[in-house]
Image (tube, rainbow, N blue to C red; front, side):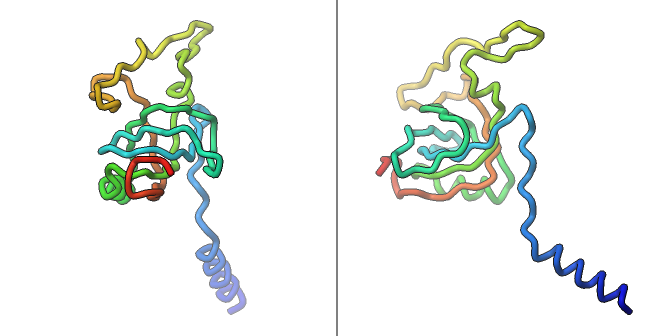
Length: 144
């Protein structure tokens, strides 16, 4: 009977503890950034003084968002809004110099050319962010 009580207590304790965040791979970095959402394209804005940003400063750049179905459904709902995104990006995607392989630097190609709207046309090499959460900051894409 004592063993059953101990197992029950252990099971309840395990359920009460929050789940650990997924481990960030060594070749990636977790970011918390603010920007404008247009479809699955997310363009960061320079951080405001009050903004909390986690990870390296990525400046103004565009990411293609990917994630689980429930998160991507939220991305669709927040189209053309100012949002805060938490996600994982490969470090090599953030490095404008490319990736070093065996002492040789391999560049990601020519600089990204944007269409007149400022959003990648789909033919450029755009970094992918694996989104874990997204929340709305404003109803429009103009920073406040």
